[in-house]
Image 1 (cartoon, rainbow, N blue to C red):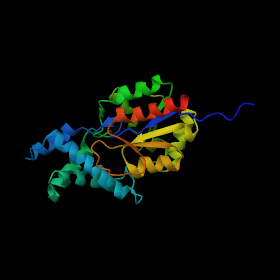
Image 2 (image 1 turned 45 degrees about the vertical axis):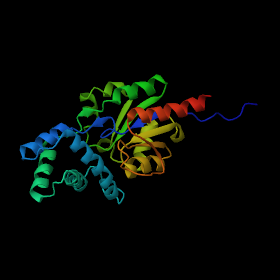
Image 3 (image 1 turned 180 degrees about the vertical axis):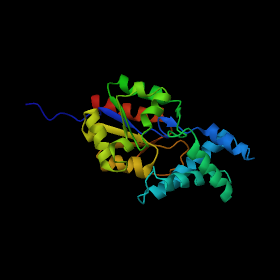
Image 4 (image 1 turned 90 degrees about the vertical axis):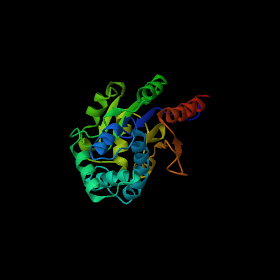
Amino acid sequence: MAGPARSRTRAVLFDAGNTLLRMNYPAIARHLASRGHAVTVEAVEEAELHARVRLDADLAHGVSTEGRPAQDRYTSYLLEGLGLTDVEEIDAAVSFKRGYNPPAGLFDRADPGARAAIREVKAAGLVVGVVSNSNGSARALLDGAGLAAELDFVIDSALVGVEKPDPRIFHLGLAQAGVAAHEAVYIGDLYSIDVLGARAAGLGSILLDPRGFWGPRDCDTARDLGGATALVLATLRKEQA
């Protein structure tokens, strides 16, 4: 008599912003240069990586990622990471961010490893989708970055009426993928929103941590998308052995 079927990874769900899509750091550097602050693109990126960790402490207390308070704090934290603490400069940066490429915003570039990561997991026979907190622009941004056609589906919080870390939005992704929670892995950039949200919904999770700024965490971490998908595929090979 055959035993119960073994569990196997069947789907990978990605976050969009700061995961498949990268913030337009050069645009921020140009804005600051127009204000008389010569900062490098690399410095902006470093400040943003610190800012997302700081923001996570706010998000852990129930602040919405898409609300103005979180978005404004995110901008403030980024500028503080560049040594810019003057209220006038922070207000100018907040206004710049709100007015840049509306309604989509600054996440308008594909991560350099995004297309390869998606194709690698699809080549392994996995379903690949996006579950994102967004303002209704996630698909348009992914399309503009040349990634939407590579995906099996995109779930945008503004369109479905629920946002991460609520388990219900992950369950919508699972339904689209046609898999059970234990058969899916979620890859994102925020611990409280992505890791804890996915965990509450029963999914595995991988936290992107490009510089190690998150410190020790009770989850798998990867420096980039290639590293994250390598973890998924290594697990898949073990499951198939």
